Image 1 (cartoon, protein in one colour):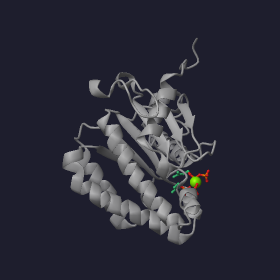
Image 2 (cartoon, protein in one colour):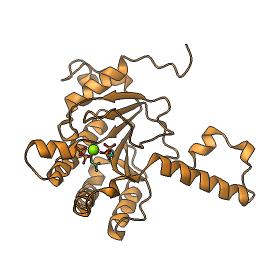
Image 3 (cartoon, helix red, strand yellow):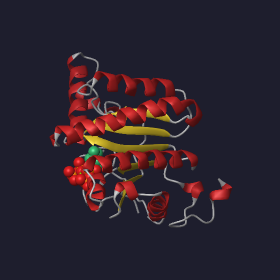
Image 4 (spheres, helix red, strand yellow):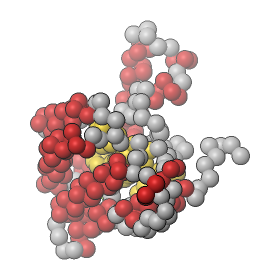
Length: 247
Ligand code: IPE
Ligand code: IPE
Ligand code: MG
């Protein structure tokens, strides 16, 4: 990492003190395409390509966890052609990722309810998770058909079932136990949540997990969110003082 230490484009980053977990709301694909007079699907293709670049870079700099919001529980409201284009891009990405996995050694996990997805796509998701279980590189979590409220409801239902079964008691539930019922079980909370595209909202992303995350918003659209933009976000994070309610 020493080589990377001093000058980085965009902003100066201390690579010895990176956040452990960075989460990104990959937003702005549609506007990126519109500005170029292209169909929205072209924006999704450019966004998918950028995801590849940024995920690889995060692995290279030694980030431990990268979580990306790829498709929300609300994104089904979009026109069917757009939804199927996004799913098609995901399929293409996973097929390529499987071919490269031995080399990349990125650990992949999917957060969200995959059951409404095409069975072939579900199988590809499971396959990439299985192949990479023992990889030690950066863990990339892809939020797919993910919604923070949906995740919390599912956790509440699962906990209630365990209580009914006599395995758990309501008064014993701790924050740590509850975290174990979430899609993100075992993943530390994000330290930094980045939202490109200029929107200043969380859009149902990691509601429980981001309780004490630092937020970074930028007007740059996701397909244009380069390594330099990531450096700016990391440098901003490194300039913050996290107190977690203390002094
Ligand atoms: C994010 O880009 C991709 C998904 C939500 C799947 P958008 O498609 O939301 O892009 P904008 O916000 O319309 O520009
Ligand atoms: C959030 O972006 C979801 C993803 C990036 C996958 P949206 O574009 O769906 O969010 P809103 O509708 O602007 O809040
Ligand atoms: Mg959007």
